[in-house]
Image (tube, rainbow, N blue to C red; front, top):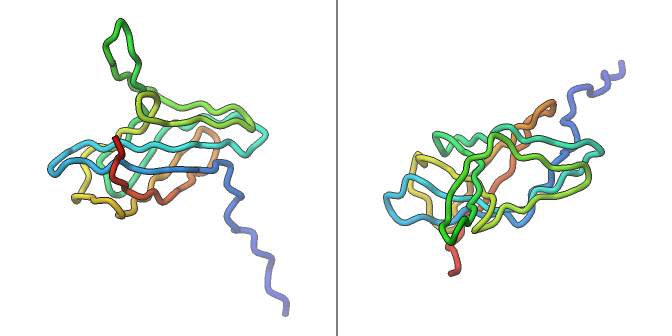
Length: 134
């Protein structure tokens, strides 16, 4: 008897996470930042509406904006990536803020972050903690 076809295969990823890293924070810090390039591999626009990780109480999309010589941080409710395009999360611009790590993290540690987009299945990526180069 033939086995049934696999109908529960994981869907092809629609996001490609590249050059991702989390900045190692000073001891006792309750906030860390993540940077990466997020590429939309699909033919449709994607809006990432939330981020999750078992290692943090919450993750938010933020952007540093300089106004009149003063850096201000703004929270974004989502990140939109046009079809076939990419967005760069980098120091001094858009980035992820990771709040309240459940254990101290050092360079070399790995963290799973799940990207949840509107009308798409969640997609996870493993990201390495690195010591920032200033």
